[in-house]
Length: 321
Image 1: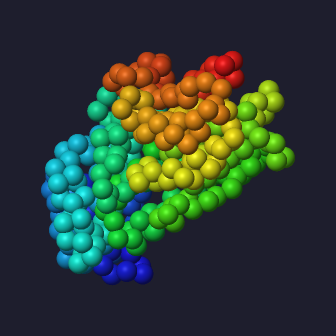
Image 2: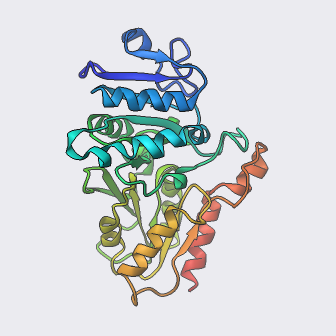
């Protein structure tokens, strides 16, 4: 916002002193009072305003208080934001970003804890980003705002206090970063120091990263060697980079935050089967949240969402094939 006077911020309860439900925008309305707007409780209106501002040459950033509420803006996203660039070709760009917190783990219950990205995957000319805490989310957000495509920017609630705590994963965790066709990071982690081939490849994204550090450290003690691939872009899917990362690895586990049926993991698995046909030891295992509502009760919620224990169990299941 300091660098571009066309950057506009809008959303519910984002003005100081509140600064949004998760305090991400705190201080901005004080610093940029003419370019930060609080809105009525209407996600459809917020999305419509955002599309209109982008059409007029501004760079709007909208905040939806919870990712669950994005369903209320589906018409503006699917029939407007995702279509205008294709309808008018090179005559226009649509630089707009819809930010929203997603995921469970906070006891917020069935309508404030979902990961609904599967509802918008695959829309032409519409980007969906889900940074992990192995990258700098602020830098990726700036890149998205500076780009030309309408973008859904997913922020896992449990990553807010974890941002850039990369030092806690030092030791056996190695990290390299590649960049996809749109210059978004694809992080590759491993829990072995040499050039040997991993026993299992894990493909995941977003908030799953919070669990992978401890899991990879524990598996290293068991001498189970893991390569993990964490793309930031969910759609379009940087499948060539994922295929390259998993090349030659005979066991694959795909993890997503949402329930795995008809979702991101299905697309990743199908693409990896196409690329690695004949070299795998068995089927690609997919895990995610249970096909259920997400309870507010912490013990019940833990049974539904992905956990370290569920990932470890899946790894041992794949190793037994």
